[in-house]
Image (cartoon, rainbow, N blue to C red):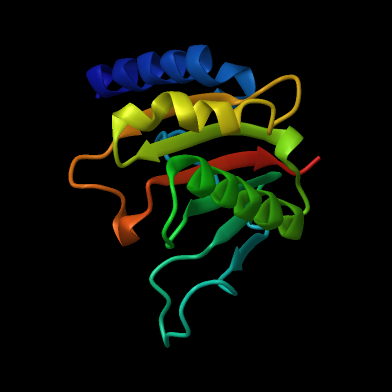
Length: 159
């Protein structure tokens, strides 16, 4: 019993250092997250195929953040055409959810070919304002689904 309490206290301290005091306070005695049931979660499935049970949501709004699903370009064109289209689609989705490109916090870029990195950056630069979000860019083994040359997803603040 003492070992379990000691372990719990260590985990609380780790949580406090990672999430700050407020994050540690979100954990109860058994270290399970306390969920505020008043927080609403909004799923947008407008852009997803008309299915009885959709495969994914195009965006989800939760706790002051909007999560945008990966957008691809499924037409003939080069990496610049595809990047421009995908960024325009992200912008539309963000605005529909009540956010904007300037409020994006995190971006993931998936390239079908790493050789397209420089050309993708030429189109990407400046699209998120003067303070761009953090970003991860990877080349996807086997290509991007739907034969897009690039797919981009993001997380943004609402306010």
